[in-house]
Image (cartoon, rainbow, N blue to C red; front, side):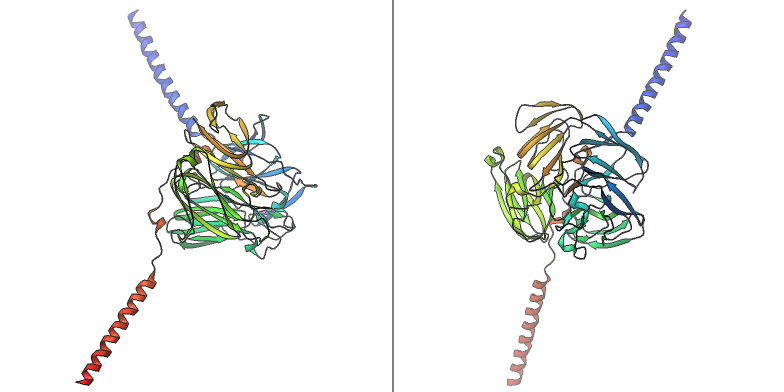
Length: 493
């Protein structure tokens, strides 16, 4: 009997060990296929297509033409790794509306109906650009069109040394004049860097070198109206950028509203960089920015050469009262570096129709907060809060409420404060007149967790050799005077 019990005990122990092993293997497998999730909302567009809008884009050097259904936006999904499975879900109806597998550098196009609240679930990190509006692709329109957004880095967030992206739309009737609209490749070096940019088919490429705070701009191929010429570089709309030092990359065009990620990561910080381009001189247009404090402190606005443009102070009462600084810059091209002694959020944009804050142009942008982090922002039109997990959230200093995974809440226009015990994603919408020209890259919760230091050379100024030259000239003149006077004395003797 003891022998039988002993055998059973040994067998049970073996099964227990096997169970533990299999459980650990299963846990590792679950971790390896962890989901990446991206949320978004398609605004109801003012101008819907009276007929299917036909658009062209270069894929592998060949024109790819397709119809955009009436009252739909375009979701461009680019694979950053081979074998990435993606699903797109309508989270209000709880319906899957699209699924596929995408390869590295491969782009898929998804049409999403106006008004849809959706999420993308992918097995690996992706680059997802939501864009729409009749004027965005119709280059026959009188007004220039394009969309501004930061391009996500492969390692998360919007700062890094490798980027794979679908170039944001940058089209306009006067294609011969890029300055009329802007550039959909805007490289900003956070430290000294060598860089190389090529299309995904490796037919076209360019490279260069930038000092800290150096900038490189160009126009890349993007989607256009059917039969229209573009003039941008490349044989594909997907591009690959590598740099030797940390950099940020964006599209900077006319008519935008962009929440800026801090140089140190996330959307709350003390140092930010953002380009703004207002090149259409007409009444009611101005470049502008909004700074909302989370701590008291001093704020300085510099150009890229560290010349001070403007300053502002936030007191403790400003923080308690959720006050903000809205500043108009006028018409022109601006490369803004913002430095604050206290934590702030930073948004840039431009107005249309009037220069007031409520007239910021039609666009969408995304922000997010880490667990336990307060986020403050201004919503010109409205904002949508998405819950990637079951969470407890406090909105505008109210009573904490529960939000279930994949649920959302719509906020009205104005200044808002949000903090939760889990990650939250927020889409902010701005429409001064019409929803006809908008777009932004989506973010995922892990984008909010990246942390960086401000590079040591970021605040270095170029050496001013004029002082050395002037000093050398004074020394030479002094020596000449000395020798002349000495010669005169010698002659007199």
